[in-house]
Length: 330
Image 1 (cartoon, rainbow, N blue to C red):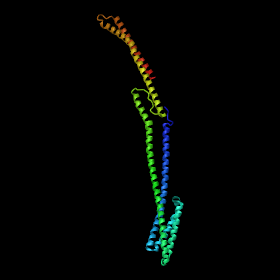
Image 2: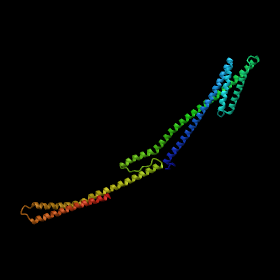
Image 3: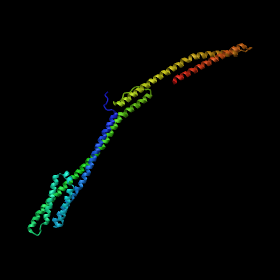
């Protein structure tokens, strides 16, 4: 059975390293997009100001032609100055976002509009030939004003679109981060559950069986080197326990044998001594006539000798027991 190239420890380290790199990449991308979004929002504010000023210009232009009040015309010239100020303040940003050519076209049209409006306001409305000229100038102003407003609205819409795209991208990245974290946790949990928890559960069940006397070896359910080594050590432990159990069984059998054979010889000695004691005691009890002092003396001596033999047998048993206890402790 081929072993995997990477160990469990190395797999966990690699998993965390890859997860860290990916998360840092996603966070860095999100951070960059947030900075870009902030920049676009700031630029959009300027574009909105530009659009607003062009709308004011067009409003004053219509009022000029409607009421023939030159104050509205002068207000259009003020709006042109504000528009030009916005273009100069944000020229580089506008050129980068909307292209230099488009901004030059817008500036050129703004200049033409200013010139046409100035000529219109300077013309003498009392002269008949000027009236026709003013009608032509009015048409020119209206056309240029329409182009200016259309262009201002288009670049404002473009910025709105860019901002919404950036927001959607940030949202998708955040969703990707959440999915990545969720999938990563599931994979990591599966790795730990399949590679570590399940093999340990098998060891736990087999340890219980060893307690019941089953010393059979088990095969590792995992190809991981660390788990395989744990199972080998567990099997060695089971073999050692089985050997010790067998040695204890042999020792118990030997002790039982000695306990069976040893008391037989001792029992014969005890029975003989007890028989002689009984016989001597009976002799003493059966003497009903004149007591024979010499016979009594001999019986008492015999009884004392038998008692001494019994004491020696008991002391021998005690000494053997002490010797066995000493050997067992050593």
